[in-house]
Every structure is written in structure tokens, then in C-alpha cells.
Length: 109
Image: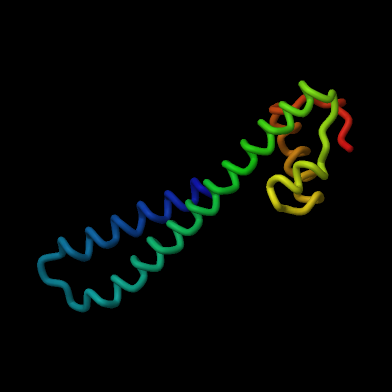
């Protein structure tokens, strides 16, 4: 998601530069509207994507710390700490296991 956002921001910035550099623009407002939408949408996607990556990293770090201390992952404690539902925590733990951040075979309570 973040990569798509960065790509859209770059496309929007190139469109704005193209509109501003044009020596005889017929109607610059037409093109500017689309460029602003690309920049705004790309910025939103980049922001949301970075937040998702940061939350995955934080949950994985806390999960690894719980594994070291207790030999299991307490999904309820994680959901209370990060203030998101236990189902989302379990989904993010599964994704972290698929990306090999968290070892498989760990008990999740």
C-alpha cells in the first residue's frame, strides 16, 4: 500500500511540473485537478501503509518479547496494549509468522 502511495505522489508531482512548465497552457485547471487528486490519494495511501507496517513491527516485537518471557503469545494482552481487537492481533501474528518474523509452533493464547 505504501509503495502504491509513493508512486501516485510521484505521478501527481510530475503532472504538476508538466502543467507548470508548459509554455502555452490551454486550461491548466483541468489538469491540476487530476494531479491534486493523485497527490492527495497517494499521500493517504503512503500514510496508511506506513502505519500498517509500524503496527506489524510493534506487534511482532512485543510477541517476541512474550515468547522469551512466557514461551507463548498472549493475544488478549496484546489486544489490550495496542487497543485493537484480538482477531486483528491473531491475523497480524499469522502474517508475521508467514514472513518469518515469529517462529511457527508457538502457542497463542
